[in-house]
Length: 560
Ligand code: ZN
Image 1 (cartoon, rainbow, N blue to C red):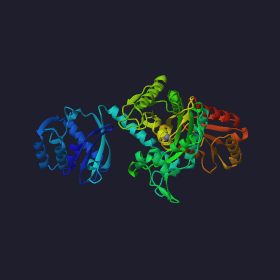
Image 2 (cartoon, protein in one colour):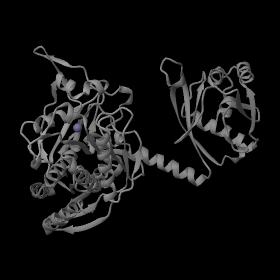
Image 3 (cartoon, helix red, strand yellow):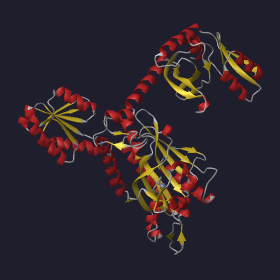
Image 4 (cartoon, rainbow, N blue to C red):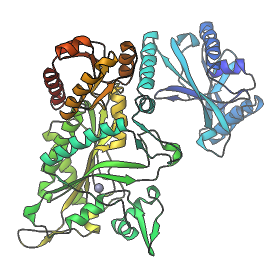
């Protein structure tokens, strides 16, 4: 690609062009500003170079020779790169009349390149530093066969179609805007409907799993965050404090200290443990505007948070319960493929070696007990304890970090949490932080992409769309609507004076799972006519039958 660009734009200077996990890129310094329209022209030139099938030959030069060579050819970026290489010699690769600095290895000749495609153009600062010149980066991919290339391009097309920012707009689920502020999410009625289903499900299941649900404030005195150590360890993610009646307050980046405070509101005995507190707790964390990304990286979000206070001899059981609970929740949302990571003690840590050993052992045992495969991330634990992270794989096989289970030796110590043992002495409980979905915002983003916006019936913002054929069916249709709403379904009704085909397309664009078409025949028979969003016709049925039919599909979510 660099050779082709040099041929077409001879005044271009070459910066760097590495292979990356998703393909390759090259950064160019060129007067011409590249657009998507330039890519086919560059590709044509590349094809010529490939067809000429020139061999790649390796040359080794001393550093001085190489610097001299690139200075003479005006490649100042290469000169800068070479002067930082510590080896005595550097290698260059040559093909036809094109020479570049490269460690190698290379294919034997240009003809060995079988399939490639240039994808996009983007700006990139030289060496990633915004104080340096902005260069132009061209991205591409290359495969050994045309089939593999096609597969990959189809995959990229699918990724684009499922982009949650695009679907969020098309399906009217959520928005963010500059008037409100970046990274702050507005949940529109259709998105909020999904969130309510998720929250209700989450609350019911936590009740069943013997958690107690809490609500806590969105801010607290700055002193609290000093005590917890957040101000020392977490300051760069926290917002500036605000002053109220001469005291400093801080908007919360975490829910933990509030849960601790409720734990401490009673004397706890060894028989009271474990105590499991859960909250859908909204927190605010500072993220640089440059890293914000749709719902995946935001500034305000709601964690599905919980803190378990237990005795040391209970850790393993509790972690096992959390693991089972997590996998059940993920499976219900359609994720049965995941990767599990166990992160062990980092270099800087609090707590005794013995406590780390015990807690890490408990996490390992729980994973082994469930027969789960996992990878160890040595030294990647948080300073306060070891953790298990679960990354789900979506329908395109992409990995997303959602669930985390963390043992904490720090907070119980710092906030002086105790329980009374059988011997009437005071002991420190172990604290486990856990989030199953991570945050509702992020999880929603992942769900949108996983389902491509075509949510299963139990999650769909609108479950049934009632479509009237003409004005004389509106009254009958309104009755059906009322009955379905009373039965707890989410229903909308399209009584516009439009052709039925148009109404069906409108509902299909919103990916509504079922459409009920209502005309003379249905009115006469006291029925509705059902079709699926994929166009499949289910046929005519009574309202009772429809209700039972929908109920059954909604109930499957738990086993599916
Ligand atoms: Zn916590």
